[in-house]
Length: 627
Image (cartoon, rainbow, N blue to C red; front, side):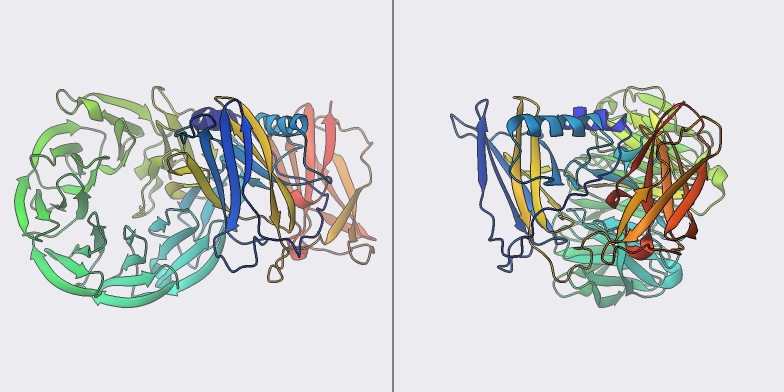
C-alpha cells in the first residue's frame, strides 16, 4: 500500500491546503478517548494523545502521537504490514462527515486535488539537502515531482558539514565548523530552534543508539550533547585532528578515532570518560561497526590495511591487507559485507565480516568515495564519473554482479566544491529507490531499481547540494498491528482524521480535537482578508496580464496598505510551471503584479505576507483559465 501510495503521489504535483472555515473553539475540550470502527472484517482503533502528558489534553501546535491499532475483527489478531494511509484536515462544517463525504475526501487526497489538501499529511516525507552555502533545502516531493517544490530554506550561521536525525524525525542536528556550533532544526516548523556552542570546528556527528547523547567531533576531541536539554554536558579530549565516531550494539561505549593519530579511543558513556586507547598501527581514515562480528573496522589510507577491533574486549583481532589509498568503509544491512573505497586505484574492496577476509576487488568509476545501501544493492558514488555503480548483494557469495546508471549530467567532482562529511545519496522512502545529490548539476536525482536511468529529479533552486537525506514523518508500524507517527495540529479546532486501508478496502473518518494553546502565537485567525478585483478579465497565453487584489485587516476591516512583503505565487495546475514575485502597492490596500503565462491551462494564484504571518495556504486562491 505504502509503495503504491508514494508512487501515485510522486507522479502528481499536489497543491496546498486552502481551508478558510474556522472550527468551533475548543478551550474546554476534555481528553480524547479511543475511537473504534469495524468494516470488512477489520477493526480499527484510533487515538491521539500529546507527547508531553500534562493533564490538559491535546493542544494546538504541540507534538501529538497519532496511533492506529488494526486487527482482524473475528480473531482479534493484530494485522501487520497493512500500511494504512491517513490525512488530517480541520472540519469545515458542523458534524462528522458521512461515509460518502469521507470517501470523496480520501479520493481527492489520492488524486492530488489542488482544491482539497489536508492540514497534516500523515504519509508525508521530505527531501532535504545540505547546501554549499549556509542553508538546508527542504523539498516536499508531494508538491511537485519533476519541478521541485521548495517548502522551506532554514538558514545556518555557516555551511553545514554533517548532520544527524532523531529516529522520530523531529530534530535535525547540523554541524557548522566555521561557527563552532551545532544547529538544531525543528522539522515540524523547519526553523532553527537553537545553536549549540561546541569546541573548535565540529565536523562528524553521531547519535548513540538510545539517542540520549549526540556526539560531535571537533579538532581536539568530542562534545557530548544532551538531546533533551540541547546542551553540551562534557567535552572529552581524544587527540588533535578530525574525528570519526561509532557505537556498538548497545550504549555502553563510544569509539572515537582521530584521523591524525593511530589510536581508537574507548569512552565509557555512563561515566563520560575515556578509559582506553587501542593502538591500531596507522593513521585512521574511517571506522565502521559490524553487528554480525560485533567488531569495529578501521581503514588506514597510507598502509592500505583494515584493523579489526573487538567491541567487547577492546582488543585488536586481526589486520586485513588491501592496498594504499583506501578511505571510506561502510557495512550493508546485517553487517556481513563491508565495502572499502580505494579512491586512488578506483576500486572497491568487499570484505566478509564472518571470516574477516577480503572477498572481492571490484573496479568502479574514477575516485569512489561514498556508499549507500538498499536491501538488494550497494551503491557506489565516484567523484570522477557521472555513473553510479550498483553491486548486487546477493551475488557476493560468487561472481559479483554490477549495474551502472547515470547519476547526473556531470561527475560530482566537477562541481569543484568541498565535499561534506554527510552522505551524498540516501535510500528513498519507497523500497528499492535511491536519492542522489549531484553538486555539479545542482540537482537531486530519484532512481528506482530496475531502471536504466533516474525516474526524475528535484531542482534545488540554484543551491549546490552537498548531501541529501529523507525526513519520513509517515505512519510506521511500531509494534505488530500498531501504526504511529508524531505530528502537530496547527490550530485549535475539530479535525477529521481520514484513514485508508487498501486491502481489504476500508475508509473511515475519525475525529481529533485540539485545544487553544495560549503560548502559541500562530493559533489565531488569519490577519488578512483578500478580495480579487479583476477575476473576470480574460487571461491569454504569452500576453501580459495584471493580477489585482485588495487586502483588508481582519480585525479592523480597514485596507492593509503599503505592505512591503506581499508575495504572489502563480502556477500551472498541476504545478509544473510556477512563478513567484513581490506585489506592488498602488494605494487603498490594493496590490498588483504582472504575469505572462507560457501555455494554455488552469492557473492558480496565491498570496502571502510574512510580516503579517500569512502563508500562501491561508488565504483563498484565485483560479484563472488561460487560452
